Image 1 (cartoon, rainbow, N blue to C red):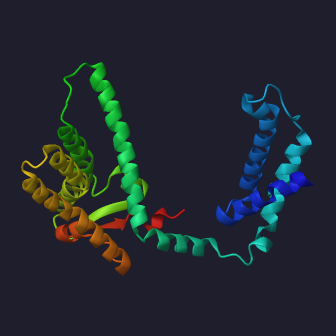
Image 2 (image 1 turned 60 degrees about the vertical axis):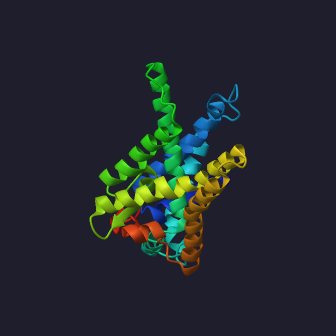
Length: 264
């Protein structure tokens, strides 16, 4: 009996969420049952040196029957559950909300992809014995400029991370120039400024009293973008208006690229 009850939820879910027909449920339930039996027969596909259970045709038929039983029980079981259409509408409504966590996750994905790409390029560069680029600033400008400036301009406000999270940068007027200035402010002023003041502080400490007032002035200037960004972020987070100062200056915003036709 357990073999039947094991796949009943599978049959219910197939008909409820994917609206499968009887033949489709039969085929998928049989495939799932066959997967169970082959897993046992192969000893978890070679992990164990021998099968830990025998291949049983009765189990195959019972598991398949459980999926079909779930197919017929679906109207009774899901009577009190929301319809698929209402689930899709709720999911679409949630997908239209662009929060900071979603944007941050897209940025993290972008930096991970950029890291992999730069590693591969550096490896090929060394194998070809091309002249090394020793300037870290130049390396940053090249990698960031191509990935975060050129790609969004050519790809209608998308990077790979934004595409995966289904986000897109849009502008009110002249979208390519607006996206260019937005990305330039973010990746060449705001983000580097979080490191610039530390570099300047280290240089000031190393120089002792010489030109200390100049370094102090530079540190103050370099602190302005991080402080402005942090204050603007906290304010927009409290007021629930996710448009930061560099987006207001460039008349850009990040929207969801999910459309009703893309709902599952």
